[in-house]
Length: 516
Image (cartoon, rainbow, N blue to C red; front, side):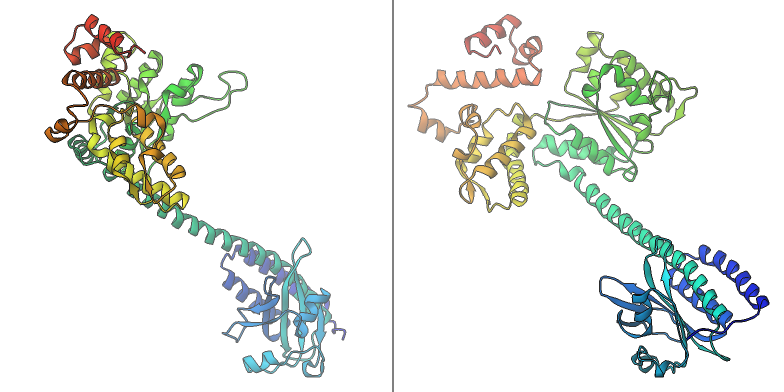
């Protein structure tokens, strides 16, 4: 049926109102309120009793109306049914003057709502990309029939409504996703904070207990910390524990391996660089500034150049960073944790490290012991790694045989905890049974075992197999290896630890084939 027409004055009033409605639609971000606003304005300007906005649920093939004037319940039905379904399929407006005489009318909705529909003006909700996202209906013209101007007005309003609804839905989805990400981030942060605490430093030996205690007592301060120890002893783990147990835990923890930075890029990477300092150079924030409010961990700090050391010292003294090519310093608030496997005092004597920087760093000193110094903790650490990798790989492995534990406990471990972790991971892959056997361990671990501390009982049992001289030799080799590893193969320092002359140590290294 063709709708009736109205006067030009009436048309002007409606389209003036449409401009005002469009502004209000664009400012409304609440989806439910937006639906209500559209329905309310439609009924008012076409003089109808009720308006309903049906949204298409593509996944279920249904139309649903959460907001309809005078209706509190959500209406949901097959998208192929009723006048709304016909409009959706044809993608064209439709005016029905007598609903109950139309074969398209779906009376079940009236049964649900208790409302009696007389006539209907129904138009598709079409986006600018010509996608139909629903149907807009106004019901029961209060006087007479729906006019052509009513139809044009409702269609124009529907076009504006489709844009606003699409934007609002996207905004709502983004807000929901943002909230999910915030909650996920909080959960992950909590997980990280729980993972990196003093309890994450495993062990029951006195040396490990002392390190945990020191971290707990100093975490809440902002003083610099110097952490030393061989590679693989857990220096970064201790630095992370200091950070995540402090009030800075919600701010960044930025780790930088100074040895891995190319000499030409050290200063720009650490301190930042301004655009245009050299051809093709873009502005880049330095790692120190990136850690603002949090903790900066400088691993292998002994490898920094003297120039970079001087600039780092200024950062610690002045609490500000000077960019390469920058015109003014940038204030920063960072806690510095530095780590090295070098003897910095020896580096100072060799004029490779600044003494004043050393004193700035060495406020709190933590020395991570080599694994061979805490042999009693090896079974505990090995079991921890076993559980971790057995779970990751889905292996039913529950422990180590006694012989495997003894083999692990008597190996030299030049790679420390990192080497132990990799060895256990390998064993989890290769083990055939529910228990790791000594035969599952690598050949190096099995063959390069150190002398085992002997009780009187074990000494008596094996006395006929190994003479006193042989056992002393084995112990001497073990002590020399320990001293050389502890001093990073510095023979002069190792000889002092062993109470030998420098030449005496050289002779023993040659005798036992330990020169390399």
